Amino acid sequence: MGFSTESEGTMGTEEFLAEAESPAPAPLAAAMGPILGDLYCWGKTPLVTPTVEAVRGDKLHGITSATYSMAALMDSGVKVLEGPADPEVMEALPEDVDAAVYGDGFAVFKTREGQLLSCGSGQEGQLGLGGKCLECTLPRPLRSLDGHVVLKVSAGASHVAALTTIGDVFTWGRGFEGQLGLWSKVQPEELNRALFSLALQPKIVAGVGLANAVDVACGLKHTAVVTKSGEVLTFGEGLLGQLGHGRVTGSGIPRQALPREHGAYPKAGGGGEGEEAPETADAPDPFVEVACGWGHTLCRTRAGRLWAFGFNSHGQLGLGDRDIRYFPERITGGLLAAEDATQIAASGNVSACVLSPSMRLATWGTNAEGQQDGPVVAPAPEEEEEEEEEE
Image 1 (cartoon, helix red, strand yellow):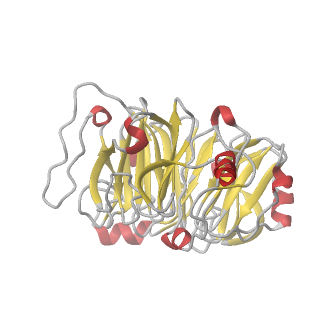
Image 2 (tube, helix red, strand yellow; image 1 turned 90 degrees about the vertical axis):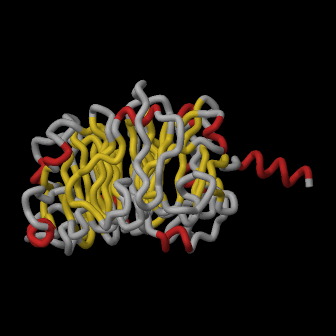
Image 3 (cartoon, helix red, strand yellow; image 1 turned 180 degrees about the vertical axis):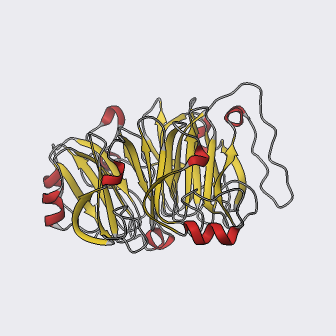
């Protein structure tokens, strides 16, 4: 999950949120949009937590989280809120780092110039540094991406996806479940698994199309991409419906989960076994943003409509129940009945969005205001204090 000036959508695990001890957001320092200046932090008890004074008055540019980690991108540099906060790593980073994503035991950083650096454990290639460097303590640049300017980076448990400024998507790391999107349509599954179970360096995802993507996000073992034409493509593990292709075990080939016209469709879609995906409407509302949690996917259209599919035992799809969705359905209840979304995020079994025009933060899923099945507003510290005084 992540909020930033550039849309961010990384992932977390079920364990990360199942162990959460704080049922509602607690103030740590400052958040997003026009009210940039307050950061709210919730979930599992942080391993490393700076004091409010440590970040107060330091402008927040973005926040991103993954399996067991969270990092805030401040004017003064990267501050790790939860996860491996090795001072040597922080000191070794360039001053212009503006994005950080964490997977299982590794980290990838992006500079404002679009260069990537990585460090940690990369036995499955998730560092992207090649076979001669499967582990490193300090961040090293991914030289194989020299000549490419990275706009966004996202991390799963053991794989990474990067979107370049021209619209190419590169993936690397673990690909056994197909989450790298590198499989060939003309080869049998066994051969695809043998050839693409690991990628030690970034490889372009030809199945997405060259210079054809505008957003990318990684779940635990799946990946989602939004194309320039407004379609949503997904690949990787699909047992929980997180690909939106129906009841499938997975796909190593990027396949369409949502066509651009689907965004304007006013009703919820099919989700049961043997059911057909709903027909599309004539007036298109193309998709522009995607976010992935542990086993679910969120998609946002240009007009601010949200669609969701995948694992839903904690209500993280926001559809008013806790049934798995194998096909995409539009979120129409709760706060989204009256407002649109301007930015989305997902992590573990939680979903979130910024509402427009109120610019409030809405959350749903595990421990979102007592585990809600639909969007609710995260309370601000001032509201909590007022309630206490009244009592």
